[in-house]
Image (cartoon, rainbow, N blue to C red; front, side, top):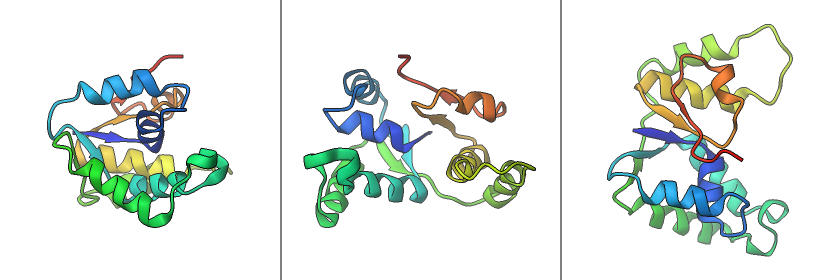
Length: 143
């Protein structure tokens, strides 16, 4: 399964996103049970869907955002990825670095979920592959 970053969800389902068309095409071409969402990405997507700074007038209410994601998950291509197994060990290894970067916590956790479960990771962040060389990273849009 491919763990999807919030950037993929946002671009794939928000028509105003600069990468909407190619990301949507990539998602649409996916096989059943091949695209995954974990709880951290779920919460991130909920935050973006309800944030007027991100979506402007397209921002949803919390109830509408919840229902929207539920409708996406009803699509046979999408499913939940469990955050079990060695996630804590991977997270500790990836996050406990001698730096002061406060922006990498979520990336570290998502990489840990993917690595622990043997999943690849799809994102629009082209720096992810360099930061996590053991992770199979898919960037479906190169722009």
